[in-house]
Image (tube, rainbow over all chains, first blue to last red; front, top):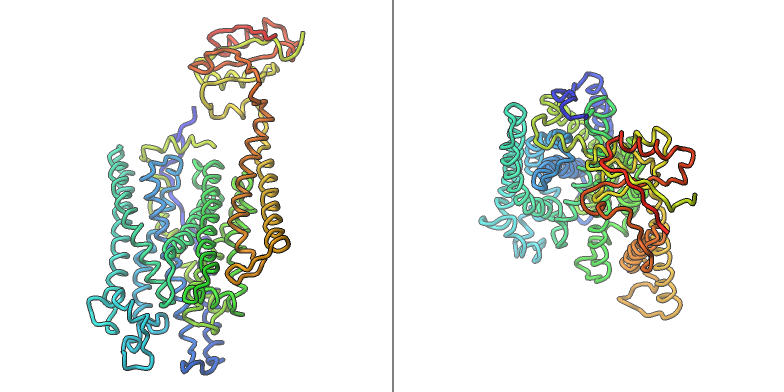
Length: 426
Length: 176
């Protein structure tokens, strides 16, 4: 009978020059678009005075940096999260795909640096609460609501000085995420060398601890990095909303890489049954995202409390952002729901490639809609700068993930459930 | 001889032997009526050459029916039959309709699927199940071959094929 060990389990992904070339070309196009966008914005000048604040093109650049920082951090951490889920759930089917999930985590240290640097450069342009005058009762810009929330950013320091609590949270989250990623990664690689079942148990233990930490940290990071842009506004399921968006984008990225490797002739062990399961995940969590998005929208729409509904008025009633709400729903719900509904679509690479690419684009639009209205107002929009920045980040992410994927075996060859994964049949 | 009345049964102990037997027997041109097993055997459907169930199509159509019904019902009630201002919204406020639409879609898809499955599998409450061999609910796999549909094949040849492919017993069973 056929067995997993009949396959070449020591196979490594060869990060060839032709693949690198494609990534560099995409990144180059992105950089070109970005520069063109910056030039157009800088030469075109601001859009004039608005409420006493002159708009400067750097604001749009920073907003774009922030969108992609948050988005790609999410995809990276979802790789580690999904890896940990496989161990916590004692899943066997996914064994041949573990290394793909793990490779996303290599982006985390880079993301941490980018995020911190962007915050220190651009905090005043991104977050209204970083201005010290909103906490100064004597100032005309004093804001009672933000003052009430100030300790969440500044404790134990004086409000309006240095947001130590916020920074500590950011550093701690990234620190622990990178720590857990390193732990899981080195255990998984060591298993390749030593074998035995003890690594699996250790990995399960660390995965479980990571998942508990991730449950709390993903939610708080969503408040910190995204929700605090609209400082007055709040939503109790925002953490779930950002997590759902990250998760679908991450699953789509995992599926895309898997399908890409299959097309290149790697991962012989992975067959249509595994692809089908990945497709189901993308399908199911697209609906989950829609459910969360709509739950948030319906409650705010129905209750119609001004301090809550302002969030959707800024978006739906805006000429700039209004259309993208519908792009968001079509790309992230209608399209995956209708296209991936049938069994055949989930088992054929061409559908998955199409849908997953569009979903990754769609969830970028989702983050665009979370960040830009609060930071840029009517000066935002999807232009050259947005497309360029997305391409630059996307190709950098792909380069980091794929080059690290090529350094170790594609399949965790001594994983105790490898045989189960091989015989996976649905 | 009448169809669907008289059968030859091959009893198998092991699922791997059963899977191979199904393949071998189908290759000799004998048509298998049905295989009964105490638990789902992976790959058995493919080996028996069964087409995929068309139940999902029924589920989809019932789901679409549910969506249409829910939207029509709510639109009729809220906009035409009994207009009430609720929270200052339009009479026909589409977002309000979504939860009910979702629930009715799921309800009709699920009930429709169960109903279609029961009808197509003859699972009515007064149906008399035909038990080929009681042990197929315990620890044996039972392969039933209809004698009438294989009238062109010699009876002994069928029995020999079953034995040579690994059946531990070969019995015959007739229903009234």
